[in-house]
Length: 195
Image (cartoon, rainbow, N blue to C red; front, side, top):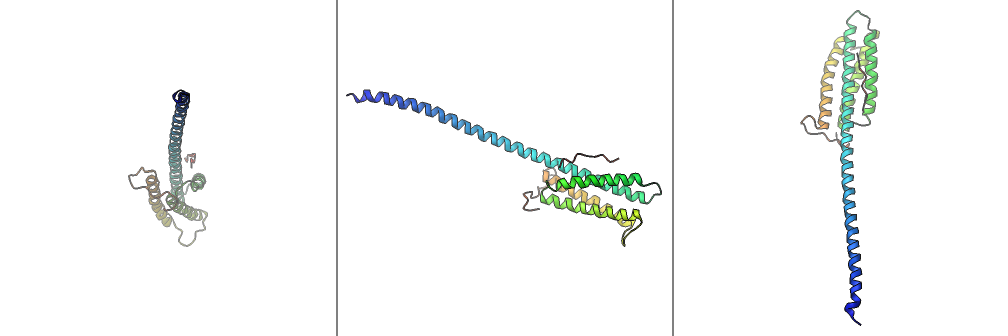
């Protein structure tokens, strides 16, 4: 029996199977490569979406905080005038409610270093609100005065600038190094919170 004659069909079968397996393996490798590329693209989209959501949240918080402080400033000025303060009170109530809602949502989204700044600003705004309400209601506590409120307002504008700098740094918009956001370190118009 001729060995070369019997081996030829086996070699041919092995060659065909090898060719088919090679094509199959190439196709599977290409599919894995496409899958990895899709995953990379999806991760990049998710990061971009997260960055946009954070930016939107920062814009809403900055706007609401500034509107609240502006309404508090208007309330201070209204206390020194004899005109009817109801419109100013209404604006203050709306600004306070908006800020409360935006801040509540921001608490779930902001990284810790920015949340600390936002919390300090929110607490100071609330303290000033209480002082102005007591003065408006005619039941001031010791230390409550228009001058004290004016000094708080001036300090709060600076604290808002600090908060804005922190938010911009987190977004990489300020040229300053970004803070650690890993969670391990640091007429009133209504706005859609976006937070």
